[in-house]
Structure formats: structure tokens, C-alpha cells
Length: 292
Image 1 (cartoon, rainbow, N blue to C red):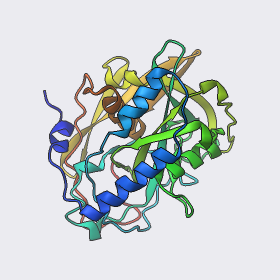
Image 2 (cartoon, rainbow, N blue to C red):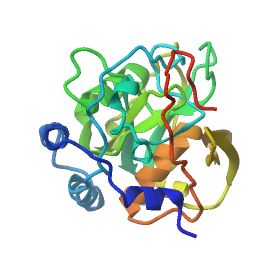
Image 3 (spheres, one colour):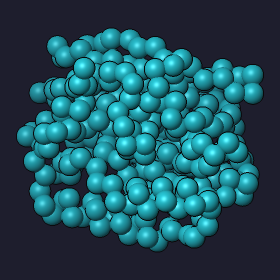
């Protein structure tokens, strides 16, 4: 069965040429300025492969409004989320003005030669989404040059990851979070894992761990839940992962982003149906508008 996402991505949205050019120029400059030789041949080959990746088009003709992600300190955690390319925002940009955020998909080569991604477990001290698994990231701030800059700054603040250790190689299409926050996934490569000495911000993070990226393409240790948004049914995916006698549940927006990242890196579709909805933007958006 062909996934709804595959069908959606085959029909590009209208995108002004100037916006696409600006986005790609920003992405290219970020990638080239952060590139450092080193690491294994596999990681160097992966970096080269991903630099040629072009995300599906999306609309940049969108101003910001006060839609806030209510997850504390501007962090990106949400039970729901799917690619923005599945939305008609280009048709009605004046009705959809999301805040912008970025998350870091930091990949490195594990001891067994597999690709792994760094994840965090949010602090139980937080008032919302406490104890949930997330990618390092948060809202863009004044002074951030681009999405890569945002993602790396947040990773340093949360887990002490030195931005100089991460080579930003590409960005994926934006995702929309539960509170309609535009989240841009940034793929970076950590060539020297041993150089990363985690320093956790206890106000935000309880734990940092890593998981194999390929697991997000497999139908193992995975569950799903069907939901509906404005008459469109979609699936939320849940992945159970155990490491060092600790169990983690990776789901919602984080799972959706990692499924997409794994599909791009491994150049294949997941072994299960994603079922993203043909998202509809409500005619009226307020601070209380959320996907459920």
C-alpha cells in the first residue's frame, strides 16, 4: 500500500522562486561553513550524500504570529506533528503565521558501525511534557543566522554539545507541531563521538541517550494510534527502545521527524504505513488552536 505521505510529496506546493533560493543559499552556507574533515569514510560519504538532498518545497511567504508552543522555555515537544508539505499553507498564507523552531538530528557512527542519533529525555521538573523523549532544539532567537544555528545553539544549552563538533549537512522539510509551530529538522554529523562530553542542563534535561536511526524504518517494537484532525484521519507512531536497562518511548512529532530522516538517509520508505493527513488550516487561528 502506498503511503499518503508518498502521494503528497509527489505534488509540490507553489513556492516563490526567491524564497526557495534564499532557503537553499542559507542551507548551503551553513553546511559549508561547518564542514570539518575527519571521521570515518562512512560518515564522510553520508555527509556528501546529504548535501545533495533537496527537501520538498514549502512556503516561506508566512509571517510570524503569537502561536506559542506551550512546552516551557520555547522547547519543541509535541504529541502530534507531520510534514508541512502536506498542508495548503501556500494558498492561504495570511491565515497561517507560525512561529519557527529547529531541532538537531545529530548522527554519529556507533561501535558496531551503525548510524545513531542523539536524543534527550525532558526533565521531570518541567510543567509540561515532562519525562518525554525529544530531539535537542527550540525556537529561533534573534541572532541565529539560520536553522542550523538555532538547532546547534539549543543542543549546546541543553546537553553541552559543542557546535564546533557538529557538521550541518542539510535540513528536511518543516514539520508542524501540535500547537502549529513550524519545526525545521536539521541533520548534523558528529564525526568524533568521543569528543562529546555531555553536560546536561538539569532544568531541561534528565538524560541523554542515543538510538539506531534505522529502527525508525522498521515495524519492530512499534505501535500506532489513529486520530482525526478536521475530518482527516492520521496515525501517531510509538517506538519502544531499551538501552542500558532503561526503557524509552519515542513518539509523536519526534518519531515523525526521525521516520522522515531515516527515509532520507537510507533512501527507502518505512516498513509500515505513515498515513499523514491532508492537513487543513483552520479559517481562524488563535493561541488555543491545537491538533488533537
